[in-house]
Image (cartoon, rainbow, N blue to C red; front, side, top):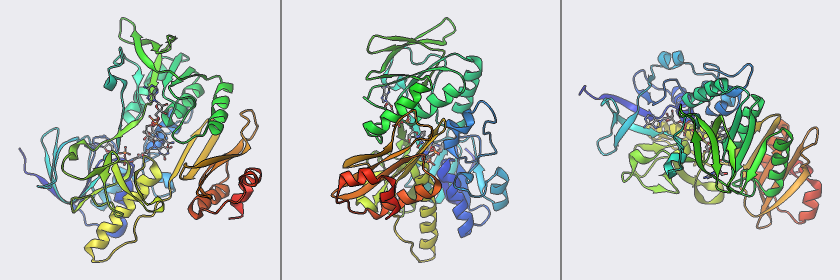
Amino acid sequence: MAAAKHFTYVILGGGVAAGYAAREFAKQGVKPGELAIISKESVAPYERPALSKGYLFPQNAARLPGFHTCVGSGGERLLPEWYSEKGIELILSTEIVKADLASKTLTSSADATFTYDTLLIATGSSVIKLTDFGVQGAEANDILYLRDIEDADKLVAAMQAKKDGKAVVVGGGYIGLELSAALKTNNFDVTMVYPEPWCMPRLFTSGLAAFYEGYYANKGIHIIKGTVAVGFDADANGDVTAVKLKNGNVLEADIVIVGVGGRPLTHLFKGQVAEEKGGIKTDAFFETSVPGVYAIADVAAFPMKLYNEIRRVEHVDHARKSAEQAVKAIKAKEAGESVPEYDYLPYFYSRSFDLSWQFYGDNVGEDVLFGDNDPTAAKPKFGSYWIKDGKVVGVFLEGGSAEENQVIAKVARAQPPVADVEALKKEGLDFAAKV
Ligand code: FDA
Ligand code: NAD
């Protein structure tokens, strides 16, 4: 075995958080050869959200190097050359299969070893597969998932091979909604299947979901709720031909896209660090129970100061901000200084067709729908407030302008009291504008 390669700082994972952490290291000052990113992927960090949106456009599709980090938040695009100019080593196509935190050593599948003084775990999430629950026939060709650029390329190739065909989308969450729209835009006959009474139940209320389900139906997307895929048929080539549902229906399919959730990639560290809520437990600076080891973005279970609770967040805004916070904290500690605690306001968003929504805060308590959620409206604008203990704690808005989205973010942070729920419903967005 070759001698271990040593770095002062290693970022394990080459996704969104890795790109933003590298930029922050460069800002704070890092010497050539001090920092390495080790990634299973073959490309430099990129803005993952593009994969379910611009990457799948039928025309003028987004392609690398167009969406390397940090363009997603309006910053400089870090091309592979940027890393070499800064002396940051990008160790790509390298999967770490063993992490020994006691000896500060990482080992790759090709048996290369890396040692570090400080480690940032940024391994993100993996997709839950139907083969994980032994769904019959789920290993057939063209049953596809979407997590990284390799998956996205397989999807693009399948869309070309099965042009104008039938697509079944399993799952009614983020991937389900964004991919159904992408497939429809690519002229597929799309059917969505999910077990819940309405789509995106972890965020949407029935009133919000009614709009999106109506809008999708008007675009010609068929929606089958309250059931799941229990098996698949394939032809002699092993290509999927049909999806069998628990309710007895059988749907013809040329392509199946599955989006039934993600799982944080923490297995390398099991038994070596404290865990909570399925993630690696950290403090407000993203340091884990092992000194010098930090966990950021999807894998971190961190103190959400605003709600006085440990939470995990699987969204890009937190990936970017947690990366920056951890690097600032590492550098401050080295200088004998400190940084303020992470004080995160949850922010989620999605875009599909001509739609675009943003959500800030917490979706708990009583919900109050406002605006016009008619799916046939020419310019839909509506939303929801969530009220807990007499205060607005969360706000959702479809079709908001940049200023209006800033206003709802301010409300979710300020948590203004609500005296009259009926008046709030009537006032709608005007209430937020006055806060
Ligand atoms: P991320 O997944 O970005 O990166 C993890 C990296 O670690 C990958 O490069 C992976 O290969 C690598 N890795 C893992 N294990 C490894 C190992 N053992 N060895 C080496 N490398 C390893 N959010 C949002 O707010 N709005 C949106 O619109 C979207 N859209 C969206 C679309 C799609 C298709 C996905 C999959 C996800 C989104 N998200 C999103 C979620 C968002 O992208 C996600 O929360 C961040 O990418 C998380 O950043 P991380 O850096 O934690 O993981
Ligand atoms: P999700 O948790 O959003 O949705 C999972 C959905 O799977 C559930 O809503 C449910 O409808 C469905 N489901 C569960 N079990 C099922 C079964 N057996 N059969 C059929 N349906 C079933 O997860 P996702 O959509 O797979 O997204 C994966 C990850 O990617 C998440 O971390 C998500 O945050 C991220 N992502 C985020 C965005 C965004 O923020 N705009 C976009 C894409 C992906």
